[in-house]
Image 1 (cartoon, rainbow, N blue to C red):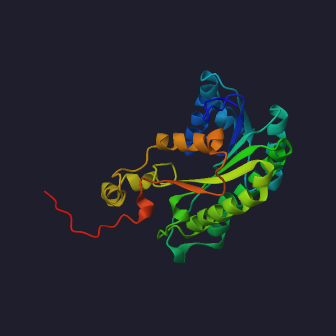
Image 2 (cartoon, rainbow, N blue to C red):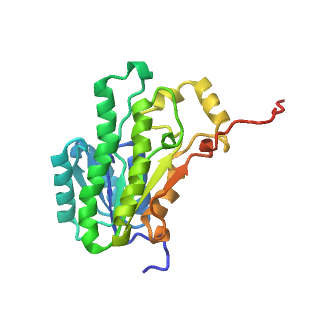
Image 3 (cartoon, helix red, strand yellow):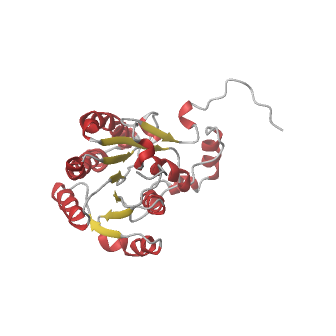
Amino acid sequence: MSENFFDLTGQVAVVTGASRGLGQYFARALARAGADLVLTSRDANALTPFVKEIEALGRRAVPLALDVRDHDSIQRMAEQASAAYEQLHILVNNAGCNVRKPALDITWDDWNLVLDTNLRGSFFVAQAIARQMLPHGYGRIINIGSVTSVMGYAGLAPYTASRGGIRQLTMSLAADWGGQGVTVNCLAPGWFRTEQNKVLYEDAGWVDYLVERIPVRRPGAPNDLDGAVVFLASEASRYVTGQTLLIDGGISTGALRATVSKRS
């Protein structure tokens, strides 16, 4: 065991949804901590520039196609990942999507798209990778959730349902696999600017509204998640399982003033 509990040298991390956004930040953080990578996207060719970036850091990166709504695709990815590396140590279950609509406008297909991607997909990816981890008696599974797993937000009914499900799923899988050396935790970001929500950040009034409710008084920056994902992937978190770690600047506290503030 390394004296540095956060050293991932010699370990392999699977990161789903790594063609853009937070998935790439998670992968970079793990690579900088020493991990080699399996990177997935629905289009493996879209990963080529990012693979080159990871290789420039001195790490190996294997790009694989994965559609988390397709069970055969999940099984194929797990088999290819296991063929590429002797052992898989870490899974960052990041692939997801969102549909922003008032609740009355959500369609049957909208609901199925979000739940099938975010919740069903996360379960079956975790199951497939756990089958590779359990014979080795070691694994770190990190399900990517959201502050919406603990708070309700108008216009996000399918998304909040899926993320609440991820939180519960994390606890169940932790109970299933903890005795066999595999921990399962949920990393839940707060409000970070991503491709899914960038239109909101183009509205200065909305940003002011958001920042007023975040105790640290700013939205999240992607590298705010680096330490958390490395912690949950590393030996430092060996006695942590079934937990949801909120990286949200404190917005989940409620962030409502009970006193009148003095403004200049």
